[in-house]
Image 1: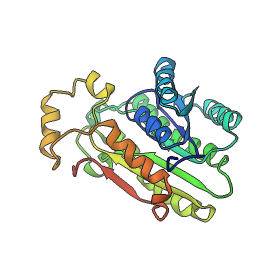
Image 2: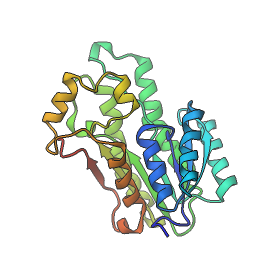
Image 3: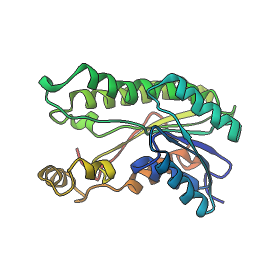
Length: 249
């Protein structure tokens, strides 16, 4: 029996990368997982297939957290399939980097719409399905909120908001036995990391130099921390921002 046996989890943006790793880790720990995706049904179905092949339980449900109606559908499908929700992982997010003069209204709306508004609305809808004994909300932030690198004003702003929201909701929802924490990764090798040309670049080398553990993160490095926070092992942890960045500051 895994530490999350009998629990139901929703992981937003779980068709690839960090979200896919989180979904698979939660399932390996015994949770029934809703693998949410915005556009890649193929990717989400692949994650579900890997979970079920390993003996776990999962379904794929489409819906963008940028749209309130699709958020409502996601949690309606969760309730239909499993009857409740115990763990919500707000992983869906987007990033763009640009100097101040390159920031556009569209890029601000896109990042804040998904990374902040979407997270808040998904949390509102998800918490409504939590049982009386409480549950867990785990937000995926970023070390960018502390590191504040150049050309990340909008993105780092969204992740700073996630930090604040995490701490506010930990206080607000604590009386309902709902714990709220954030996991803040540094650079992680994902499909996006590779497609953006970061792998093997001078930018990657500079990040390695500022990482005491001397490597770029892997999705599993984040997933295992999320699984810990979702378990009773972290029963006295709430309102925390756990940096999973190999010591990068």
